[in-house]
Structures are given as C-alpha cells and as structure tokens.
Image (cartoon, rainbow, N blue to C red):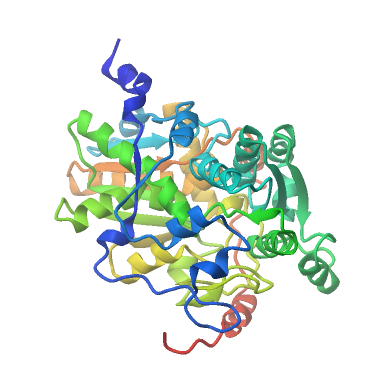
Length: 455
C-alpha cells in the first residue's frame, strides 16, 4: 500500500480544528454594520438568520475552532481530499515548475462547498431549525446544502440565479434529488423578486438578487434560517480544511509552495486553500505569493473599490467593507456562475488591502483553454470556475520556464465540470465569447454605494 493510499484511508489526517486567520492578522478587519443604524453589528442582530454557534464563529478571534465530531464523521466520506502533482501538465508546458493541485471534486456534490454546507446544516439542526433558505449561482452551493440538508433532516429552499437555472438543469436536478426545492431568481415568490421583475421581466438574475429573496424568506418565518455559501467569516473558516490538509500533504512530499492560486467569486475556496499558508507566514513562516484569480466580466478585486456595501440587491443584509462593484450590479451571463457576485469576502478584501495577496482577472476563453489542457493531461474535467485558477497556475508555470527557475505552484481545483458540459460544448463549437460588463451599469451601481460615516 502506497503512502498516498495510507493517507487517504487514515481519518486521523482529517483536521480536528478549523483555522481562523483573524487571530494572526496585523490589523483587525473593519466591523460589519447594521443596515438601519450603520453602527457596528452586534451578535443579537444576526439571530433572526443564523444559529448562535455560527454567529460566534463569525466574530471569533481565537486561532483554532474545533470541528464537531458529527461533522468530521461526514467529512470522512471524501476528506482528506487528494493532492496531486500535475506531472503530465508540467511536461506539456515544458516548465521546470512543480505544479500541485488540491482536488475538491471528490465530494458528493462535486465541489468544495460541502465543507461548509455540512457544518452549517449541523449547527442549524442543533439549534432546532428544520428549514433553511439560501441562494446559489452555478448550483454548486445549492446542491451542497441540499446534500447536507438531506443528511440532517432539514428542508432546503434554494433561489438559483435565473441564467444559471437555465444553463445548468442537471445541477437543479441534483438539488431536487436530495430533496430541496429550486426556484429561478428573480421569482414571484418574494417582494424582492417581484420588484425586480416589475422593472425588467426578463431579468437574468444575480447572486445579489437571489440572496435578497432567500433572506426575505428566512426573515419572515420563525422556523427558517438563512445559509450563505461564501463571503462570511464562518464560511471561509470552514473551508480552511483544504489548506490545512494541503500543508500536511506537502510536508509528506517534502515540498512547500512558492505560489498559491485560487479562483475568487465570493472568496471561500481561495480562502480555504490560502489562509492556512498565509497564517503560517504571518507567524514567521515562509513567504508565499498568493494570487486570487477572478473573471474579467465581474472584476471585483481588480476593479471594485474597497467600501462598505450591502451583500444583496434589496439591501436586507448588513453592510460589510469589501471590494465591490455595487449591490445592484448585474454581471453578464458567462459560464462560471459561481464567480458572478458583486462583492468579495470582507476577509479576502481586507488582506488584499494589507498587500498580503494579489489579484488578476481573466476572460473566459483563455480560462476554458486552460481547463481543456488540464483535462487532456491530468484527466479531470474542471468546473468553469476552477478554470480561472488553472489559468493562473499555468501562467505562473510558463513564467518559471521563461526565467529558468523551479518554483512550487499550488492551486485549488475546487470542483469538477460534469454538470457544466453545455459550457464545454459551446466552447468547442466556438459559441463561447468573452463577455464584457456594461461600464454605464457599473458606474450607476458604484454611484449607489451607501454613505457610511467613519467607524
């Protein structure tokens, strides 16, 4: 039995604690604000939406937070996820770089999202909640929460961004197979949805709108909580199992990354792979170049100002300080639906402001080219979102070739593309195009950023 197989079969290799970056930051992140008073949010302000245990994690400052045993027992189904050396990709690129990827597509839902869906469902069940409302873009988060809801006996209601609802029917079917209900957003079921449709009946939807609908449903029913698949601190916390495992696996391989690349939409999978390494660096460890890659059609980190903004279009959520394109911004319907969000996780935004990470933006055609190359060398078909990280990793590997240096590059392959075949069919048929956002719409959305006094 090889060392790798032993690792995969050894449940003791599953982390027992999540890692909280806040404990090691040189400057604390700005506080979230109440949407009505614009004063710093208190824990009680979040109780209509979240169980107390998740609220405590949201504001936690300790470095390690224990993973409950029932959650670790479910993690055993796919964790630790494998870390691969991409030797055939290295050969195809003729690069001296050592390329590694952490593969999260082995989860039941096919992505990294169950890493947080399972604990969120667990904590809600412990609090006596039997119904959760949420949103989803490409469907990876929605299917993951549907999976977790089935395990814990929780009814899940999902509002799926309309353009993805139409593009990805198999994601929808997966959610329904696990017992969830899935509705195209904007919908007629909520006041927020009806208001959007009244202005534009053919609205393609956005994550901001879908969040508004889910929050509205949760706020109006005592038996219903809300769950978010990215952005918030507790979500990023849960995803750090990825980077913690990668640290241990690379130690087994007697290597350490010089460069880490992750795709970014809301920020959870990038934080999951990068934050444990960043924390080690902040505690005096090796310096690592951390690269967040986002879509050029929704360039939150590379174009959006760092400002307080709402997380949803109807302004039902707290204000957080983040890189944002404006809560009313609607990105074009490119295929990486999980990256079509107007804002970036406050913690990811904060570390960018501190100069601890860098950001790049790519158009979708060059990302699909990179994903196809990975599929033809490593055999794994990536999700459109993951293609952005692959593009960034390949570019770094080619830079190593140009400079004649060998660096270790780690990227997070956050999910497979088995439910995204229409995107690949469109790519091979030359129907996929590089889409651009509307500059006038962006200017209007940014003009509507809330005016917030100094906190």
